[in-house]
Amino acid sequence: MKKIVDGYFHLLKMLIALCLAVMVVLVFGNVVLRYAFNSGIPVSEELSRWLFVWLTFLGALVGMKEHGHLGVDSLVARLSPAGKKFCLVASQLLILGVLWFLFSGSLAQTQINLDVEAPASGLSMAWFYGIGLVFSVTAAGIVLHDLYRVLAGKLQDHELVMVTESEEAADLAAIQEEIAHQNRLAADHGKR
Image (cartoon, rainbow, N blue to C red; front, top):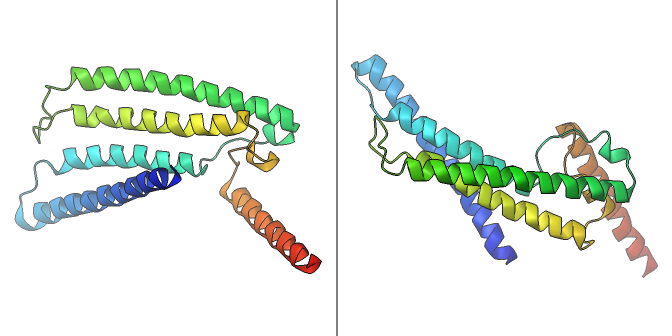
């Protein structure tokens, strides 16, 4: 199962890179055509907007899986392990509620716009709203997995706070964890 999930998120990362590359080509090509040849690519702006929306949602999914989102942890970090677990379960349940709203709204918009054509490209507008479905289903899977790990007691105390206030604090925590890991390895090696 881990290979399937890792493969899925690898695919998402490749889609993000593809979206970015196509956006650069469309926008840069359109600029060059406008200034050099007084013409342009009519669908460039529309497709670039759509790709940017998809890129943003897919990037948020990758960040969510890696627990890379920033948040305010100043209160939760000071709580006892039981308090941290309670806050984590409560926040995960709230996130699931929001994801349900996002899913149901995206599903309704996708169904409504299934036969509506985009003005420049003629593509179905369902492609634009469909990313909400992809995001909400995938994010719900991530949240449910994290919720299972909390309720099954598979998280260590330092994993109970899944956000950090700054990237520097996250980097410092990663360095401290690496040093602690190396100290444990050295201690185990010294016992032999």
